[in-house]
Image (cartoon, rainbow, N blue to C red; front, side):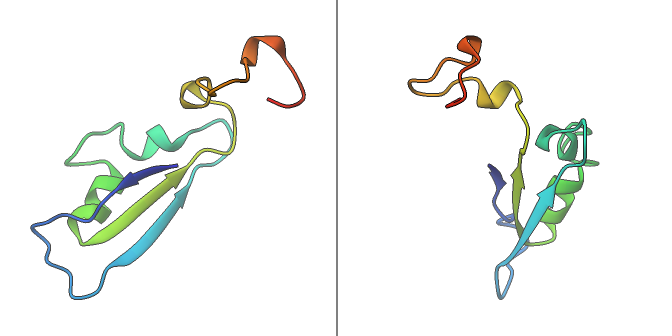
Length: 77
């Protein structure tokens, strides 16, 4: 799970949470790759939303488990 907190410049009266879920063959990186001015997650944060983005498939972010090794192809991993 990745998070972009709401922009300090937006001063929201009430913090609203937005959850972004990628589609097949994508990852949470797709919401931020265009950069701070064009990335949808950044735009939402600038409008005062607390943005949460998850990954439901293996990405480079899921390869650093504390004790399970992805190279073993274990069912636990």
